[in-house]
Length: 209
Image (tube, rainbow, N blue to C red; front, top):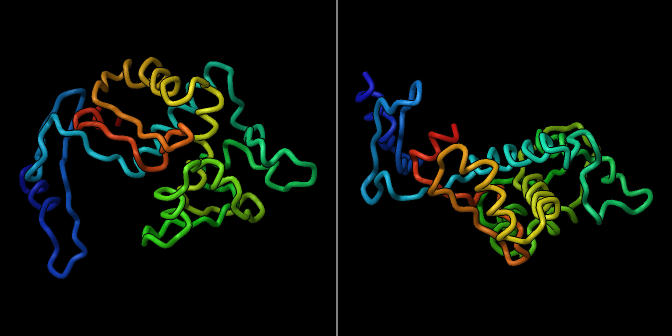
């Protein structure tokens, strides 16, 4: 039954769209029940997390909350929003995490949408996202922009630039989980690219799951 399920996952549907599945690891009670890899991939090859990376950001924000360094219900600590009368100043960390900040940034991934332009062209992804127009908080809108802002919060709260964030992530999350292959990519401002660009081997992603 598992082999049939894996066959179905890796099969490309007639007429597309292309699925391009790289790997599947099935784990229960800490034991691998089955795994399969596409050509060019194996248990040692890190794969891009794409939006699973957002869950890593969530977990790291959670450790900072646990340590008393962030309050999820407090306004997000974005310097550009601290001007009197700026309605974005009321946006909380919790709303950014839940994609209810009111930022209609969009993530169509067509190369021309605001999210794609931010991810691939902006030297400081957090600042670029924070400068966007916001609707009143409370409306759900899935966007990489929220997680770029949260990644900036990680950078500023942890301190030490890219090395500081990477070290903190190893100490508080990746190390305890046994995720030895995990790598966070950073933009030119040393902000983690937490919306999409964290890599790990499939087995390490399973450990995170």
